[in-house]
Amino acid sequence: MTPALWTAIVVELSPTEAVRALAGIGWEAFELSTEHLVMIAEAEAPEQAADDLRDVAEELGVAIPQAHLLIQANVAAADDEARERDLATVMRQIVLCERMGIEVGVIHPGGERPATLDEERAERARRLESFARLAGHAAQHGFALAVENMTDASRATRGALGQRSFGATIPELHELIDAVGADNVGICLDVGHGNVQGLDMAESVRQCGERLIALHIQDNDGSSDQHLAPTRGSIDWEAGIAALREIGFEGIFNLEIPGERGLPVELTLARMEGVLAATQWLLSR
Amino acid sequence: MYIGATSHVLMDAGLEGSLRAMARMGWEGVELALPHLREIANADRPEAEAERIGALVAELGMRMPQVHFEVAEMGSLDAEKRNADLTLVERHLELCVRMGIEVGILHPVGGMPADLDEYARVAQTRVDSFARVVEFAAGRGFSIAIENTYDPHGDETSAMGRRRFGSVIPDLLEVIDAVGMDNFGICLDTGHTNLQGIPVGEALRQCGGRLIATHMNDNHGHADEHIEPLRGTLDWPAAVAALREIRYEGIFNLEIGPLRGQPIEAQEAWLESVLTTARWLLAGGGVR
Image 1 (cartoon, each protein chain N blue to C red):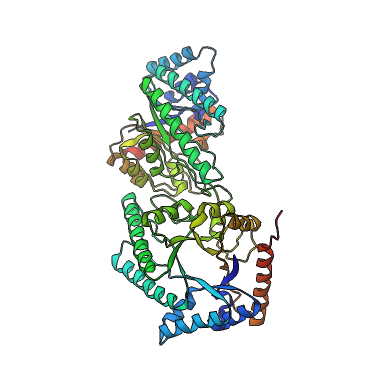
Image 2: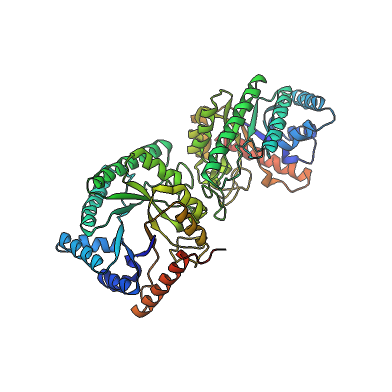
């Protein structure tokens, strides 16, 4: 497993600047963040921007095997117009990802906490239809979708299923993937979300099994989704990494850690040097 | 719909004292509380005691349609423990039949399985256990009500994280459908729905015709306080409206904690005020 970093750790920089800066301190693999993917998609010449990033990665000898597709996309939204708009955006991002040589796109399961069981069933149907369409589109571009696990909500939340959120457990992701029935849909395990949900990292890795195609590595103390660097929270990394090896996961060990932002870029980069060293140590044990 | 309360509301008065006091106040219904069920089962002559209590309820002009059974380990993978629990429930059920009780409430207990294999085995065991008790009950003109619970937000975790089976109504319907017998329904605990974040009107509509028993109680959304209606944050007018919408005609049973330790006169005065409030609610009070 190769340590990797999500590029929005230096969101102040352009996609190519971010990759150059992070490669400069030793990172060899990346997840292209939603922010940087949007910068590329909204550039004056998006295809050229995509080609530029691919060229920079090739020049530096680094890999960008996965991207975070539009993080705000709600492919299960009840509002048809909003859902179609998000689907169109995601499909466009998939085309650009193919151009950059990116093979996996992380996407959230979406949803709006319906007030009644009937609405909840309708939302499930919309989610399934959207994922089926996205999977078909992605297949045409040699691309795979990784559905990310979420967390249930806090006590104050209300809905037909109370605080439960679709996708907070791994069996719910399998249920969606089974229903879609396409080979190019897998799971992105966000281990920090799992920790907030009370899921043991090793157990959740095993629950994903061979469907695990992307990782969001981040830590927290279990009380909220803090997105800290590994070992700064309460996750059992030794057991979790052992489980990744047990299931034969060979993808990137990708850190998604906005909780480590907030410093000037040069200080963030210094901090990321330390995070890389710590990640390498974790993976070498 | 008629108003009742779980018999432990005047715990310090004992079962007979409680029943007499409740009848005097005008309570129409009562749920036999678990501690009282145990007392009857542990009496020198349990069958005779059960018949005496049943006759007393009738003499007082009250109805006792439901009972809270032991919190049996319905999903336990320890076959010996599970069998012992189910055997005890069956023994209690027979006593309840002698008292004229028609519905027994059970929790969907199954612990917090650590992995998916164990989770699946517990789920099947839970269905098997309910099937056994429901079938036993059917032969005695008795029904079983499975009660909703709520997800833990503390340190308790399982293969599903901080989720507990039975916290949402579709979980209960899944067990009922799997068992597939007519004498199996739901006991909705309104306080548990409030903790789970399910608006009570919606929870009742999800139960629909499967609702055969009630645990009406309030809380502030943080802990399972079992306080009387209108002392917490539950939307009581919505609850009453939904009960009427689904045409529920059974007991509006208040499962609220007793005021133990206070003089019995104070406890009775409090209980009388609770009845007045419940009557006001069912008469349409509080509708905005």
